[in-house]
Image (cartoon, rainbow, N blue to C red; front, side):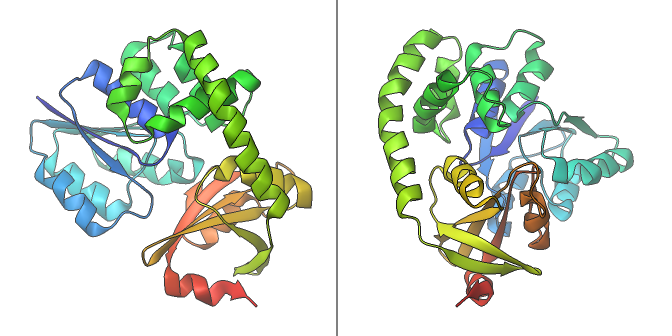
Length: 285
């Protein structure tokens, strides 16, 4: 039996979920995908799949036409996800495709869902810290920052995170403390010097800031300062990735804004991708 894993690219939670899958299936073939994936990125995945292949999709959801193609070729697809915007579609897809199984929990991170599905209870401490940040609970306070700052070094390197799953968590925390001094400086400096750019999203005028790093931390600080949802954007070739952040009482929410651009995610942390020309057209000057 062949095992293929599609995981959320450029995401600590997605990378950790893939690492957990590697722990269970050391020979699994890994494919990272971001939400703005293109047709040509799907073809190698389809080429690697046959009727004896089990496909795991972790911390991620494919769009309908691509998921249909996978279902036609694979023995089975197991989708482990927690993004609320994909829930209804995936549940409907499961009803229509007997070889597709959805495991969904909006109260867990992708890595946590993957661990519980494959290994049951008692996930390693790393998984708990990844979840604590990814779904923005912060039950473990500063330690969550330290662990995630250290794991950031291994984004899209699940084979390295796999080796850390059973490592002494105190050693990881101590290493993360050193890195956190720098990341905190970068985040605070960006927030202090941030200049407003406004974009039009539907009928909403939204503050937007150009950064591809630490978007959750920067976005949360700025949405708190201005008491409104904000956008963090980064240009990658001819596409622009937009990440929205909001607080519980904000209307619209981050998810509301992302959906207006055909994106998705969580209520207060969501994203979308649009082409560069379209992005230029929504800038308010």
